Length: 465
Image (cartoon, rainbow, N blue to C red):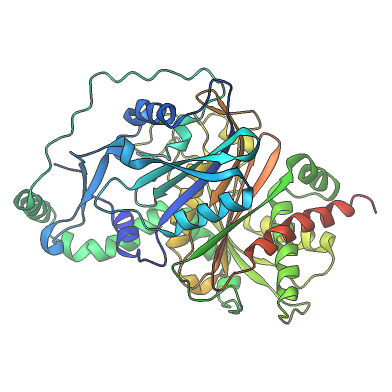
């Protein structure tokens, strides 16, 4: 019998619309090796790794009459070349051109009649670079059975590990409408309350999958009891998005942490707080000493002891915090102290040190950002203004085949009535911010990205006082 989607996974399909596609993306920039990094090589690499993630050759089949949740079935027409695509910028392609293309790709929903992922090789970048843009639906990546395939194509050596399947992949026969209905009836007979509990299980799945998220909300009840002010961040989301990036050096952020205490995560949130303050002022918004912007900060944690967990993969528990960012505070040092105090009040359960990810195979951040997006989508958007995910990555070079990855930017999706989402990943000495904004409500998202870098510089000035 085909595997049925959980209520949580199905909800990501049901809630999706043209303005808010429910997928997470990533932009990896590579230095093209002398041997080249052609489209055919990328297709071959991904095809070789697909046996490690069987879900990527499956699609969703809907039960007639919606008698039960959809099921995962093998796609008999699976064609890896359909999912791995090729595009090019006019040489020499700039970062702005790349990120404009990323925004356009991100805003387009995935085809629910096919496996729910796509990858794009972007050629024509300046200095001999290429980019890989990946899109994966939130219904797929749960951190236990399925991880983001970015985690399996990146390795610490340019000598790619050979993955030989035991036997050639042959799709299982797709069940017809009658079979899907009979399976749904059979499930209902075995569990008579299944139909009634489908709605209830959606809630229980959210709680069980995101137990630490719920605990965080309870612990932050004093915050959640007072809904945040709307402001320019809470606006209807259109079908057109923008994407911008900011960069920082991990060494600089560590220097701020060592001088003032707290964690690198606190420093990142303080930098974003300073940028949001400058951005609000640039828009002529009223900013007083009490002005706050509320962020939902979900952080996935490893759960190797979870039932059904696969060795080397991630657990599906998520820790999230509601944090009031002190954008009304003009002093960067004081902003950092406010953030550190707020995070200490939540305890340490939500913070994942980079060392905790060393035992996780491959490049884990794409999977962890997906889990963070899943947690955020499970929340009422009325209790926060934006989502910020921060995932530490490995501090050594990684390769796709022989191509060395130089940068990695997460691309977080927008929720309804939330015009901004920020993802942060550290990798090989750098810290990379990806800012997704609605084209109508956040036309100046590139200016906000520059303000993030300026805010980091402002924090650095506190070391010279």
